Every structure is written in C-alpha cells, then in structure tokens.
Amino acid sequence: MKIEFIDKKIKDINANLELIVVIDKNFEHDLVKKYQNTLKEVGFEGEQDEVILLAESKKIFVGSNSIKSKDIRPAVASAIRVVLGKNYDSIKMLTYLSHQKCTATMRALAEGIILGAYKYDRYKSKAKEPKLKEIYISSSEYNNKEVDKAAIKRAINKGIETAQAVNLARDIVNTPPDDFYPKIMARVAKDIANNEGLEYEILTKKEIAHEKMNALLSVARASSRAPRVIHLSYKPKDAKSVVSLIGKGLTYDSGGLSLKPSDFMVTMKSDKSGGSAVLAILQAVARLKLPIEVHGFVGAVENMIGGNAYKPDDVLRAKDGTTIEVRNTDAEGRLVLADVLCYAQEKVNANYIIDMATLTGACVVGVGQYTVGVMGNNQKIVDKMLYAANVASGEMATDLPFNRYLKKTLKSNIADICNIANTRYGGAITAGLFLEHFIKEENKQKWIHLDIAGPAFVEHAWGENPNGASGAGVRMVTRFIEKLSDTKHEE
Ligand code: BES
Ligand code: ZN
Ligand code: ZN
Image (tube, rainbow, N blue to C red; front, side, top):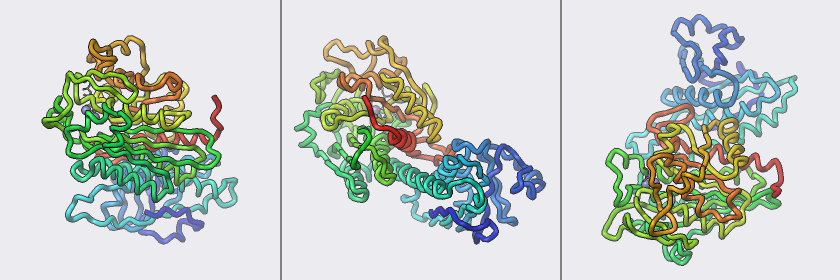
C-alpha cells in the first residue's frame, strides 16, 4: 500500500474513490453538507467506525467521534476494510485537520490505513490480490497556514513504519504451528536482523544447556522441535539509554501433561505473540532510527506431551539456581521467561527491562480481551507505559498492582518457589510476581511485565485490528521507546 501526501487540490487528484471522515456527527461541515440528505436517506448516522459507500458519487464516508488519534485510527481502518473487498485501486482524501498540532492525527491516519488493509490469506487456495494500492492525502489545505508540511510527512512515515511492524507481528502469529516452530522463529529473526542491520545471536539446544537454562529446556523436552533462544540487538551510536525486551515465544502451547481442553487449545499458536512483538519492535526501532539501544530476547519453545515430558511434581533448577516446583505444566510461559530474563540480565546492563507475554487466561478474565495488563515495582515506568499505550499508540492497557500477600501464594514446600499460586484469585498478578522473583535486586525498579494474553489474538475484527493476531504490544512499546529518545537516561 502506497500512502502519498500530495501537493495537489483534491479535485486534481485522480483516484477511484474519495474518503470523507465525518467528525463528531457534524453533517454541516463543508465536505459533508452536500451529501447530508443522501446520507440521511440511507440511514448513515456518523457513529464511530460506521461506514457507507456511495458508489454513484464515488465517495465513502466513515464516522469518527473526534479528531483524536484513538478515534481516527479505527475509523479509517474500518473504511479501508470495506474498500479492500471491492474493485477500487485508489483513494484520495482531504483531512481538514488544519490545526497546528495535526501531526499526531496524521500519524494515526497512516496507521489506520496500513493496519486496516491487513489480511492473512496465505493459506487460501484462491486468495484474491487486493486491488487497493494507493492512498493520496491532499496537502493543499495546508497552503498559507502555519503548518509544517515536512513534519506531517515525517509523522505519516512514522505511522507507516510502526504499522508495518505491527503487520509483521500479525503475520508471524497467524502462521500455523506446523509451519512455525522455534527453528523457523530463529530464521525469521535472522532475516529481520540482516534486513535491518542488527546484530544477532541464536542459541541452539546445546548452547541453551550450556547456559543452564533448565526450566526452559524442561518445557521444550517433549517436543520434536528443538528450542532456540534468540538475541537481536540494535545499537545506534550515542544511544541515550538501553532497553531490553524479553518475549514469550511459545510456538505452540498444548498445556503439556496438564493438557488443555480442546476448546482452549485452539488459537494457542498465538502463544508466540510476545516474542513476535519483540522481533517486530526491533524492526520498528531500527527503521525509525531511534537513538536508543534496544535488545530483543525471545525464548522460542513448543510445549507438547510425550514419554519424556516434564511433569507436575518435577522440581526444576532455573539459570540463576532457583528451584521451581512444577504443579501445572500449562504454566510454562513463566518457566521459559524465568530463564530468558536471567539470561538477558546477564548479557545486557539495561536501563529498562520489559517482558511481553501471553501469560495468563486470568488477565483476560480480569480486564477483558482488548486490554494489556501492565505490572511492575516501579509505578513511574508503569505509568509511562500506560501513557504510551492509551494516549499515544491507541492500544489499551491498565495496571495490575502487586502486593505482598499475593507474593506469599507462590511458596513451595519442597522448592524455592512454585510455578502456580495456591489461590485461584489474582492469577495475572501471581504470574507477574513469579517473574519478579527472577529479576535481580539491582534491576527490580527497572523491570515491567506486559500480559498481552487478551488482545494478542481475538477471533473477530475490532477497531483497527483484524480477526486473529493483532500485533499487540508493538505500537505501545515502540511509542514507549520513542518517548525515551527525548531525554538522556539518568539514574
Ligand atoms: N498461554 C497460556 C495463557 C493464555 C490463555 C494465553 C488464554 C492466551 C489466551 C498460559 O501458558 C497458560 O496456560 N496459563 C495458565 C496458567 C495456570 C495454569 C496457572 C492459565 O492461564 O490457565
Ligand atoms: Zn500454558
Ligand atoms: Zn502459554
């Protein structure tokens, strides 16, 4: 999809269709007024994301509650989704966003276009090539106004890069598990590294064993697909701070011997969403040339059953020496992350440590399918992440506070810690607290955990997201890192 910010009047742009965004049900606006009666006639009310195509007039209308990015992004995506199935190959639009601070809205607009145009049809025998190829945004309305067109162009480009990274994560997560196992994940990581000029290191089973990552290896043991630990790094000159990202890359989660019921196993190809997001974010920060050093670590593992499977009652020894009593083999993500968190802390002395994981069903029960759960000891960083999500990126996130009583529920009689809590309540937080055990004392204030189990994979389209993988976490964490670019890290 090509998006062009073009120096022509709207009437001089040659395109099949014109997209008009109706803001806040304002049918009196110059652009809309002429069509007011027709729109009334067909029952278009201008509700958020409501789309109507007036084929004869070659116009498509969509409602948006405001010009805020969080409204514009899903509105535009909804309109694009309607056009995608039709025969149009180009769209033009005027934005009438001629106020000075329109760059945020313009970025959201570009994101909405690229995110809305996403389709996963690689496994359809008769996939239709989408016809829609070009979107022209007229810049003529900015003439003679104190608006920096170059800044708008930059904002649009940022939106395109971020959304393309989101679509990369979606592609990875949507790929069926028989075609996407740890070795493939490592190959994809290598390809990203080569394309973007990143450094990479891939640990195979032997090297993982050498690193004493025995919790991860136990989870991987019953699978015929050997695990990988992936490390990508983006190291710009004069970096202002250092960020380590750690992703759960369960290419499949059957539950292991604590086998998932059939209905719960379906969609578990999405258990690699955290790791996929980490890889996509590395692509984004490299393409945006952010002045921040970013490391991405992924534990790529398949959780299966077999005669040699790890078992409830086993006691595992993690990389840092912690002994873990296994009481449920379906709480495997935290075992993999425990080792990768230890590895990441040993490898890189980061200012921020962020892990991303489809960690618990409890998070989905607690806050719903569309929201990321954010946890950590440092409320300042949690708040920064919530801002990056809810205000800047358009992803939804909320904090789930730790407390010392929940921490006690992870006590084990036989080992240092248990992989599940002794209570059915607060499962997202107890999982977060399990991870917290593996954060070194000097890093306790630097780390946050994102549980993306809800939004990572939803079986219907919502806002700017399609049915299936959403690329959850990519936009919010990229925004978080972008924001770090504004200031040099100080202790
Ligand atoms: N991958 C799942 C969590 C999950 C559930 C992700 C639903 C996406 C949608 C994780 O490994 C898991 O199975 N967690 C268990 C933990 C329990 C055994 C303590 C869960 O949430 O039930
Ligand atoms: Zn599981
Ligand atoms: Zn899992």
